[in-house]
Length: 268
Length: 361
Image (cartoon, rainbow over the protein chains, first blue to last red):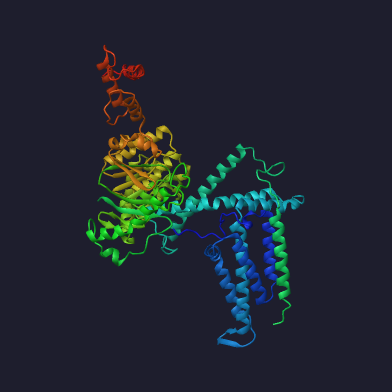
């Protein structure tokens, strides 16, 4: 079974980006995305690309790793670009056949959207590449706290998120073991989904589900045994602290916004 | 039909090169000089890896492989003979599971070859053929049960082999009988309502129903209670007596010493020792260094020997150690223990012998 590529799997490091407060990182990655949306021209996008590349450099993420981390989502990019090619019309028509028509405006728009999506995905992956999942869920909980007053179960939500993320790799390895066990019993998964293929699939899915339930039961028992009772009164082993890094990041992003925003006024 | 490992190395980071198909088919089987020469050229990397790991004075983890080591297996060469009971021992992360997965082509060596009955199983068809011949039972096999009834689960393998329903039925009956479960009683039950031990039997039957000639067991008795453990080991040794070649991975040295004809010990992916239990367990101190023990009786015998008691260095189980000590004690009766002058030794011999005295021999 091929190794499953993970979107933005944590890449441990000690770069300034890694050391930022996860809350700041979560919020500021939203700001980066907003900045990318502010860009209305290719020049603006180029500025965004330069900044994003800079962030990756600063985080010391190898280029290949960065590209590979968003590869699983490349299909979104391709589909969006294709939709734009076919449905946005205007300017010189390059190709026409039956009802399909490809024009200049379509191609330009497609390229623009593709670049923008690429930047959005990579800036999003930067967050998960440089932040451990536990930190992200912590930040998530902290940012949801104000809404707890109107009944949003902030702690529970982030706990659910954290547990789900924690068990993803576990289930990947378990699926692999089950897969190998069934292969050993002569299962063939390349066969067509009809003619017994469904039985092959159930031979993977049912053991995976039973193992998920087994894990859930064990985990809830273990949490009970440690007197876990959720939200109020819980203290942290590692309290979150904003630092000068976060302040500097805010300054950098403000600069990014200013530059990107001003590129919108450059006449083409 | 022996399984032969020839200079098998496996790396998780450098998957096997696709040099299969035509070329692999052309290479003649066992003991072909040019083919071996070719593999010799490939085996260098993992040896280099090992020396690198040794040279760098990076802190070593307490168990398993040193960090940065990428080779899970390194130049493994041995032959699993027909009808033998081979035990595999090794510390966590020493490559035991990787090794057994090579035996039916679940993973392919990065370099080297695995020959089942003289055929290289790097070839897909050969691997598929090997799978009905080599039954692998993974750790906690009951976690892989999936069907609505016990019958369907056991029939999964035979059906995948494309057998007719009569033959499938016969095989399900036969294999359930082999694991001493009552066919009529259990066939329509859901595997999930059975007890843990019964579930494991059903999972075992699922592999046996393919009528393998070799049974590969990855820690078959892990997590069972003592009674179920004994039943299971008995079942395995019965299967072995019935003509099956058995490979058993285990952490329990007593089980290995008791049942195995040969024991293979892995250390960080390399072959550390291969021989009869007697040969392997005579190297007790080396085994301890790589985090393994020796059977309890043997450990006592070794300790006594170190303390100066005149035991010859052969392999003991509880009964034979008792006999040997009793004989020694009787021989020493009347005169002071002459083996060593120390008082400490004398007490050790007395208590050792005295304990066994009640046994009438």
